[in-house]
Image 1 (spheres, rainbow, N blue to C red):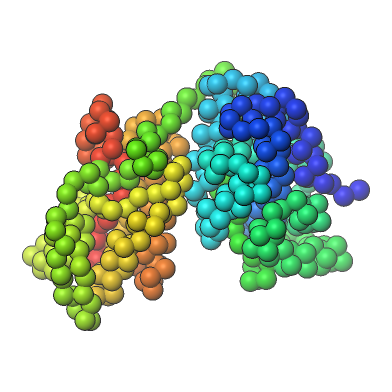
Image 2 (cartoon, helix red, strand yellow):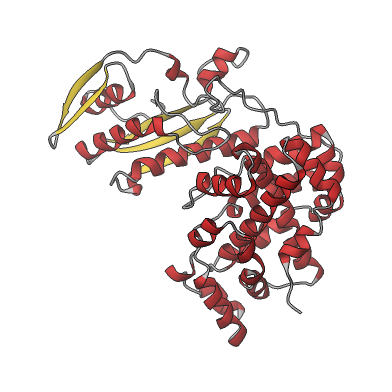
Amino acid sequence: MAVNLLELTKGYITKEVGLSISILTEESASDVQTALLGALPGLIGGTMNTASTSGGVYELIGLMNLNNENYVLNNLPEILGDPIKSKDFIANGLSMLPMLLDLDLKTVIESIAASSKLKANSVSKILSISAPIVLSVIGKQVKEKSIEPVKLTTLLVGQKEYIIKYLPKDLSTIWDFKGLEDLNKSLQKNPLSEHQLENKPVSGTTKIVYLILALLLVGAAVWGYKKLNKEEETIVVEDFPVDSSGVKGKPSGVAERNPGQLVTKQLPKDIVLEIPENGTEAKLIKFIQDSSVVVDKNYWIDFDRITFEPNLAELDDDSEAQIENIAKIMRAYPMVNIKIGGYTDNTGDATTNLMLSKSRADAVKKGIAKNDIKITRIQSEGYGIEHPIATNDTEEGRTQNRRIAINVTRK
């Protein structure tokens, strides 16, 4: 008999759990239920995609081995009903949402928000709550039925018929399930052997656009691992301070300073920039052009006009101009390679901060690469709370420490 993971997952969303989610999101219970009907199948769809690749299914199993699914599934009302435990649970899930590869997370959140009439922040919180639940349901099946990797692939890619009708209409068109449906039919006729799974190529038709769970699972796994080893320990993750514009922590302390008047810079290859005279671009150009200055891994230039969507690593529209300018500089100097670094203040859990800083650095890297710059010329790394440039004892200092910076690795 086929296993319906969506129905199994919904079985853990009791009235008590739904009420807790309603309270945590400050949304009506009916709207929360509608949002869950979009979030849960979407997350299951993400595992389908992961399991269809040669190494993805092993990654999933590794994450499940870390996750304490019994703790999650047996204690959901207690977890979500407790202010401290729920904050820990949500923060670990929320920190994973920005860590996407190829899917526009903003589109996913807005789609579910539109279909459920919820605020985007509420949808983000619901996704964060749902991810470890979905992972735990799958992990429970794997362990109770001793499902091997090959069988797990078959189980997951066969979930389309159960989830497709619940997806918001626009998301069901964004996510191309056709390739996975074909793969499922093929598996039913000719099941893969362990050897074939390890060597199975990843075709373009079987690659759904990457969804939230692939990296959400990491957060759920880390969270479960901590609970498994320290059952009584509560990890308190404080919220990032929100500035007046609603952006969750300014990414660069330099953004508070005046970068100066606009000046015109003529670069090689007939590239002309209009940039602030004391801004990031001007400092970067000066460093590149100065032949007496050598590349230094410890010399970083803070971005001054890079900001993100609230609670996410989604670059906002105001960041586009600076992203494009960096790409133009790299086109003018084709020998130049760079590294993007992400940093946070010391508020909250260090591991969560590290992952958020990494995802934001990755977002800047991808933004530059989209402007016809080879991705191999750009590195990115998250440093979390390391390398503060100001004290974390004041809000001003913490604002400066939440930043994105650039380092020239070759010129």
